[in-house]
Image (cartoon, rainbow, N blue to C red):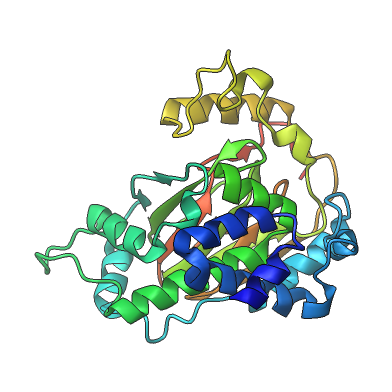
Length: 318
């Protein structure tokens, strides 16, 4: 614990994490952060003096693309954590439309104290329906399985984003001015989401089945272009927008951003699949399309803003 705190003092978000450690989150929170950061950069490299050399600038599309593909190794081991897999997979494969749970919106430092596994189970109970079973299956078979999932989920979060992004997530529950939420999404076979850009970061993990995507790997839209206007910011005097935005509020923001977004380049799309436990990371400004294949649907757990910026007719060259 003392070693963890010493290392954390050198990080941009060190103060925030030390305060959280004093609240009792050291075992499940501080250690995974140190483990993830040292695994990614090496223990000797975590110093304030050279931190700027470790995190690539957001405009460096080539470096960001390389980082994106290196994240394929980030995953959660669900082989012995998830229970009742066959029953849940059967349900996912029988649905005919995308089903979403009620979003769990983050507020402030809530991400340090919540249990992602508890949220997964509650949200599964909300959306699961089955004619063959009167009870909602338990996703995790034991307390140890829940704890392992919680620890590995946080480690994936800390390994997936740079310090500036993490500071905004940890202190405000936001990314690029947009509130973030946790949500369980069930996709049927042969489903697809329209091509879109991300105004905020996203981290999605398939829990059952597999998810596929087509991505423009080396082109990113400017993050400033995807921020909210001043009168839409959370907590400003003239803003009426909530930290737990309604569907109508999200539509207003999405439509406003869509008017400003253009992609006039030729982009090479890369297609890949993500199996159970693999982490799909979308940075601000990334452009992609998610879909499922004919074999199976997918149940995934996502940290995102519930905000996709779709391209209007004529705004996307390809």
